[in-house]
Image (cartoon, rainbow, N blue to C red; front, side, top):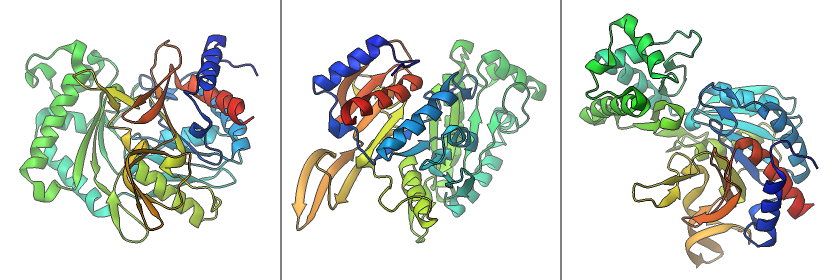
Length: 388
């Protein structure tokens, strides 16, 4: 098979990783879930559009992976458009849905390809977001950022979300200043030592501090909200901590929770077979920050993607012998308790020209690949090599 993005050297390296036992059959579940982050993987953070070629590659990928009964999920902290664009490129029929706004919403795909949007974030906590935004507008710079809702050739800074308050900075510092200038705002008046070459780090850091001050000052009101900063996407998110399940129970909001809820909702509608569901231990997850590095240089699972890669304290019955358990294992009657369970494989998108490589990070098998386009073709290639 000819590949557009995997080079001959890439496929030779991947074959070597399989023959050497670094990539095993256990890493590639048949009937499992192939889950994807969006920004930095299939979507360019600078343009907020697919990387060139992604739409065609996703279509080919979804068609070929149906041979392995794969459930395809895109999970993103981004808005609905990221999930919609992803789902609309898939070749139908295919079992797929999207999790957007960090787990606050799901987009279900019917067998016909029609999409259905649902809000699952906790409604009471969402109400607090509006109160927080009103309070933040008492600060001149924060007000200018939050009130920037009109798009020109670039999207608005106050990104339209349903379940989060989100600020997305323009791609260049001069664009940011030009958006703020009509409101009489000069960033240098508010951020001491402001350096345009580090504007993303400094402005998002300033915004985080302002949000944190208000939340910490009135914890009784805002304790149900949390802050997430993703500098690679130029975004800060304020989001609820919980979603409300169909059974009335509140659970911690995350991409994992959205994926789990999405499976239940798809099956309830009859749009997903009972045997096919999202379980972290039978999944592969691809993200550009699957692996991060501490200030001491230690490699760790990226905090913003960890919920899709590692789960704590799972009770599983029965458990696949191919699952990747981390830490202590205890047997209690006919149940098995694992201190941690990971996805079968995490794919870390490096956004560079480095060759494919495999390593274990905090007990998780990680395949490093240069781009999301290469990951799409690498999964096709590896499934074919291993399963035929």
